[in-house]
Image 1 (tube, rainbow, N blue to C red):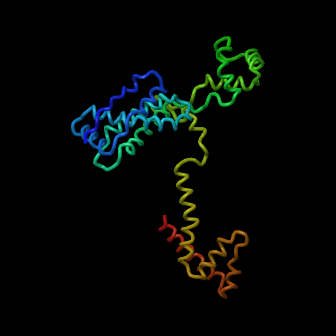
Image 2 (image 1 turned 30 degrees about the vertical axis):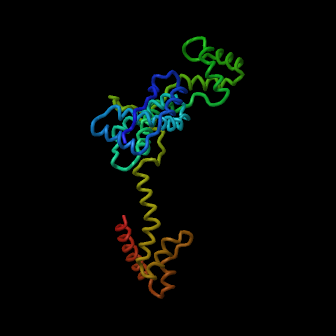
Image 3 (image 1 turned 90 degrees about the vertical axis):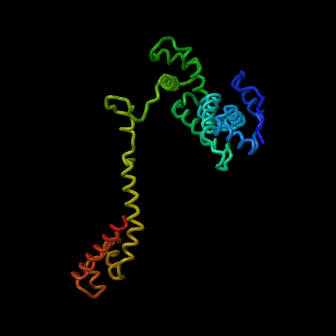
Amino acid sequence: MTATALDFPVPSTLGSLESYIQAVNRFPLLTAEQEHDLSVRFQENQDVEAARQLVLSHLRLVVAIARGYLGYGLPHADLIQEGNVGLMKAVKRYDPERGVRLVSFAVHWIKAEIHEYILKNWRLLKVATTKAQRKLFFNLRSMKKRDGSLTSGDVEDMARTLNVSHADVREMETRMYGQDVSLEPSMDSEEDSFAPIAYLAAPNAEPTQHIENKEREKLATVGLSRALDGLDARSRHIVEARWLNEENPATLHELAAVYGISAERVRQVEVKALQKMRATLAGAR
């Protein structure tokens, strides 16, 4: 069965986002057989019309996915546009013989393009969130009398007129005219730069330290238990009494009295047990 051509107008010729969404929702969904036929035509014959129909029938999917990213403050139309690029990439790479519908395959490519767009364009700092901040945002630029920073008099006038605090005016000025700063230095910078990553990183956030801490925790739990299990009962008791009893560690003489041997013999048993445990722990690394 051959898929019939889609006779609806191309949405990009429509005048508004609402009209676009209404149009793409009217495009018919393809059956599995139609989708397979169109995909084969495109893959084997580079049939552009087949690719067009595959794209048009899935535009509603892009609209739905893009709607989920509106919270980033970027225009819905731009998100849809980037998602459409991902859809076209998916159609180009789709293999109809894998037994997976295009809708499942395309989700990854659509989201990947939208994610890339957000990462490149989203400002990390939201300019206005509260009602007072929104009032300041829409009025600060028009009320500002001159270029440069606000003077104390300007701040006083704006705060009184808009019924906000002086601190709110100063903060909004910083938000509006401040620039986002990259955490890491630019890759094309010819000189070493002191980027925020150098002084904002947590003291224990270095990756190798995390790995060392994980290994240390592993040795302190699983490894230590395995090493103790490898000792005989007397050796284990001596090690636990001497090294694992932090509140009241036993002395050599106390253990000598328990086992009826000399303190020197207790020390020898302890040394031998610790050597065996070190060997076990080394093997567990």
